[in-house]
Amino acid sequence: MLDTNLSVKNVSKYFKNNIKANNNISIEFQTHEITALIGHNGAGKTTLLNQIGGLIIPSEGQIHINNIDVIKEHSKVRKLVSTMPQFQVPLKGVSMLQAIESIAMIKGFSSKVSKKKAEEIISSLQLDNWKNIEGEKLSGGLQRLTSFAMTVIDEAPVIILDEPTNDVDPIRRILMWKYLRKLADKGSIIIIVTHNLFEVEKYADRYILLDKGCVKKDINISNRYSQNIKHMLCVYDIDNIDISMFSSDFVTKYDIEQKKLTVSLKEENIYRAITIVLEVLKNGKATSYDLKIENLYDNYEDMINE
Amino acid sequence: MSRYNSSIGLLKWSLIRHKFYIPVFVIVQVVLSLAVIYGFSFITNAKDYISRSFLCTGAITINILAVTCVLAPQIVSEAKQNGVFNYQKTLPISRVGILLSDLLIWGLIPLPGILLCMFIGAINFDMKIYLDFIGVFSLLFVILSLLLLGFAIAYLLPPNVMTLITQVIMIVGLLFSPIIYSEDRLPIWLSYVYNVLPFVPVSNIIRASLFHLNDYNMTHYLVVMVWGIISFVGAMFIIARRK
Image 1 (tube, rainbow over the protein chains, first blue to last red):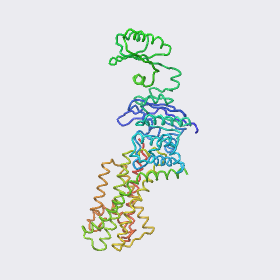
Image 2 (image 1 turned 90 degrees about the vertical axis):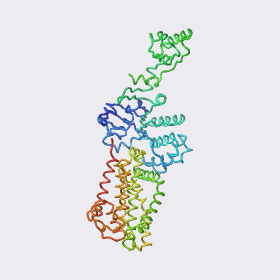
Image 3 (image 1 turned 180 degrees about the horizontal axis):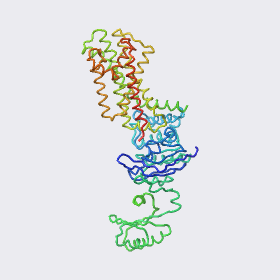
């Protein structure tokens, strides 16, 4: 697949009553990359996805895919972008196999190829047992997986997915992410809205934190770890008066209700911090501790509040 | 080739989604046809050839109305509410294609009712049927025009208003309009109103083209065509609209 170029430049969207859904967003999306859009409900993630898919016209700014203007040349863009919407794609009266096969045909494949591709993806997602069952009889998770298969079947240059793993079991979530990785490796740009920060950290290449319609963070996950790895030390059942030995040297956060102290550490400070913890434990001023690499979930609230 | 596959895929998907409804709609048409032809003959005391011919051609028109302006808008409106419509908008298909695929599927659905009415007319009332080029063309013309009207009602109006409008069309069409009786029983002004709306002209086109019971009147075709064009523009406006 040829490399695809997707650029979002100074995009804003104002709805009625001057409500800003997004505000001056500029992002370059890279081919071979899985980008996760994260943020609170109402942060503007779905609006941005719909703008990229050409379903919402920005009030200001431009979006180009391979130099094609998404706003003006929507019919061309529809052939480049495949969308999995946030809502459940209705499958009433249609079996899983029929739905995937029909969408493959709509996307231009012959009947024979469509059936083959549909069977392959059903097998990849381990859905063979349900392939001939009509959509309305499938569970929410299986309907979501069907919708996912309908979206990725044509391996479009740009694939946008709005909360695809919702309701899906843990095993098939992994299969979905692996499938997306395979598509990214082949050259697709994958943009995914999700609230599952553990999955973002584990499977995405980059995350963009949106807040109140603006880009708050744009982080390349692999760079983040190679350049700025941080650790988190949690000390349990420690009283407020005993935390001073940490707070004088390190960045700390204390939860009064849980009596839990969280210390953010760089690698070179770990030894010193552990020494202090052991001393605290020895004096009976805390009950236990754990040490882990700081993850996106731990940082999320701080990033939003920055 | 890709466009061919895409069109076939769209039709296939539309057909599979509608297959559940088709047997039910056929039964509805059979019941409706028998009810109008035989039921109304008791109410209106239709014993002469002209009165019975009105019941028979009226039953065809009411069948078409039931499918195009009542059932189709309800199913299209359901598709609008449950997300099929929004999902279709994300697919690499032309906006006209979305409308055409539904037109084709829905265009076939009224045929069983029409054929049954023709059969009853021919066997029971000795009515002569003219299924020539003009007859077939006229039939397709009225079905497609009224389907476009039905789709426009579904796309343009919120679901509760759509339900109200389709019920009004059916009740007025079935009970009051000069579809199942002769127009000359009405005051002139009311007759004028009915001829500006598409339903009575449709009935007159069917009587003229399929049964040669009326003279051809191009004004009837013109009225139906204008409604069809306005409806097409309205439906396309909603289908192609982006927020």
